[in-house]
Image (tube, rainbow, N blue to C red; front, side):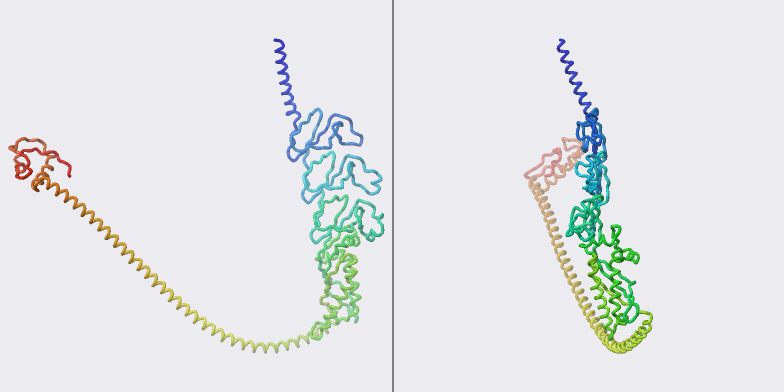
Length: 532
């Protein structure tokens, strides 16, 4: 008996222990991590970390564990572990993340002295590889995150890379150097010779920098260029230059002409032209210098005279000047990374001393031209009047022919309309005639049917009457029978003798007659029989 109680108590204790264990696991140890968050685990027991360490490498140390746990259900014994729940880091499109590792070994001093400031695997410091757009579970005790803009190199642009970390370019052999401006080998600090095509680049700004440079063609007008002519006049031509950056020399151009690592390439206004380093440091100085050299070999009249029948040489002089200027400027700018694609020379403003002479010459030429034009005008007026008369005659003839054609067309249309009307009337009349005929046939057939029915009914009645009369032997007996048959239902008493007053009224009807069938005297009328 005692042993049975012990067993019962053991079973109850085991059940209670199981319930307590389940309660502990699901109510105390359970940690729910929602979507978009992650779990950082902190170990409460174990060996102490090294003085220079901030993360516990495994469960044998106490401290924050490096590995994080994602969304979901986790079970942690609160006596052994603590925890933190953090939001996941979202890096949007067009951005990238720069990590700084807080744990690991320190970068050796000799590498820092050599300019290598990035952390390798297992070292604390800036991580070279950036994080591209996405969602990440970053342990805040292990990493610092900085979100920066990605670099977009648009169409008609190239990217020039500037490496901030790497080997000293001064150690390169002479054949690997691109002058003293850019670096032709990967892995060295400085501006890289190899350009980047259009695209979006996720770079670490502590590692390198990308400068977009526009390479599309630009056209700019210069109206502040002047040079002395061979005959002593100062000329101010309008010169238009079409230029573009040579993509192969974009890196060298960036180093040569800018002090801040950026190139301003606007040229739509006078202010923008003044800020454009390509124009102010490369294009415009060469245009001005060679314009003075080439222009001084021409007279002012070679450019200023208005082209006419005798002034073809002016156009040729201007073209020779343009061609000489292009041949002189193009190779010099090409060496500096600028491709001069075209130069156009416009009309020049004449000096004041030549303005009156040119004006008089132009007035004389204009008067001569007016006289020529007046002669041409009179000749044209005569020809025009003749043409107008011919046009009027042709117009009247065309109008008459048009009216005739219209009248003929209208007559034909009216004839067609009348024909269509008559045809429609004939069709309607024919349809009505056929309908009347069909209706007459129907009426006739209906009348014949009704007549046949009436004839059949009359013949049936006559046959029935004939049969009834033949059954009585004579019409008088049949008539007497019919009268009695109709009177019988109205009689109120039965009499046995015809000597009564009432019987004498019908004595004539009760007198027997001769014949094959006779009725007995004083026969009481029988109840009416149904009609045959």
